[in-house]
Length: 450
Image (cartoon, rainbow, N blue to C red; front, side, top):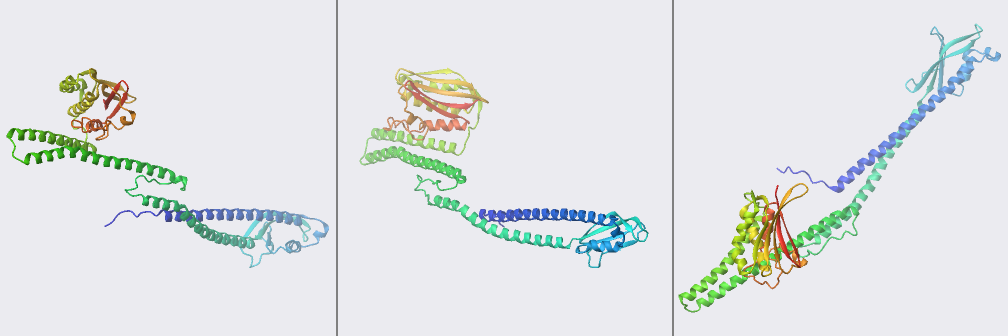
């Protein structure tokens, strides 16, 4: 059963939310307009009631002679003439109705009432009396206007949402076109076009970081591909020479019967080539394990001077043959896998003794140094001699790389020594460095010491 989450569709997602937000936005605006209009109507209704209350109070309290001759009903009917949306009823303090202009058609639930005290001149008693008056306003015209506004706003909101959503859909499609163009560019890149890069000049600025990162990824892949091609060529070259020698020497020996001594010499020569092949294969297997993330198997805190002394003793004969001295300067300690560090130091010394100036000293410097938040152990192998050009220096730790393109001394150096040094440094969580000038070359390892 497939339980994978559905893959979101960016275009549909943007269109859906654009439609929802448009509807919510227009709905909020419509509601605000409706509420403001309703409040305005309420204020206007209260103002109208204020005016009517003042007019009614004034009419009833007028004690001019011509008013005294009018009955209460007469005055109120004159007051209400032409104002069909108003009604008045008056009760005395005993609750008796003195006047009531309300009819059956006057709506109770669509009206506003306001009660207040009034005074009027009674023609029967010829006295000024007080009573409770209630002014009633018919609100139906305003309610009808408010309903009409509500339906108009609702229709506008729905129509506006549909129209804006359609425009939003077109806008989303137009906005996603650069992504489709980018996909087309990526689709045009094949394994044979590693030099081709994405062109972001016509793309929106938001996509420029993606283009930059993708082009950087292509740069790294191209470098890795070129290194792989170079590695394959170097491996073929390194193995081809001894294999060709083995084949040709075996063919020559087999052409006719040979004395045992001559056969022994040929076999010894072939054995030397086979050992060289085995050494190359062994180094390649070691680098392969390091590439797969193999770390140092057993790291113990140890002083580096004794380890360097063991390696120096091993190279003493080689140094004497080359008229060189091997010196150890200082000491340091770090958690190390001693056999691996011995192998790295051996490779560094082998490299230094090949290029050191005759009669000079190859120095193994050992130092501990404090960094901002940790301590490091630095192993540096220094040799005097002609420096290495900067163009070669950054490639020294690449596999099968030789600064000397003539492959001088290729029988003893197949170009994996410094690559193994770098692999051992990484297996300890460290790094390598190489410096060179006219006075000599310094190549070394930096190991974490804490």
